[in-house]
Length: 101
Image 1 (cartoon, helix red, strand yellow):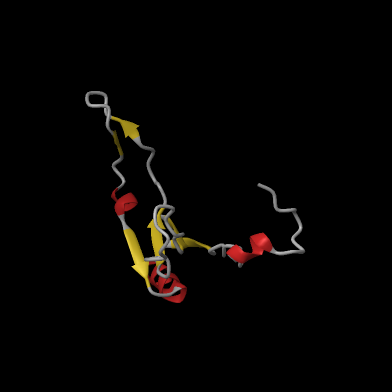
Image 2: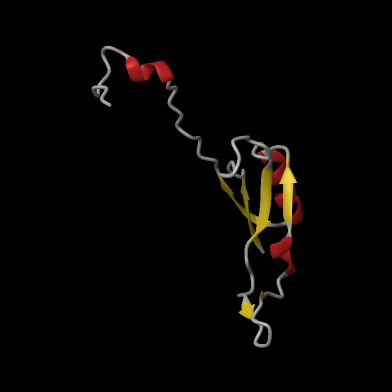
């Protein structure tokens, strides 16, 4: 029973950062998924795939995994490189690319 601990990224659908400060523990897939021959649904007998535990800090998530004997790996979040750009920079006299219409 292995799990991964990570901090989810911001959704692409919204500009806010809701729920990105929490750490999540998700279990890895233990059984392969199979297709139901009658209805065509994809299913699995592994119920731990449905669990998604959230923690306030990384230390709490790691402590929980160690206490419960869960093999885990930590995936550190990647910080986005943000450039501070102003609209007035488009009209600077000494800009790198010349301004054209």
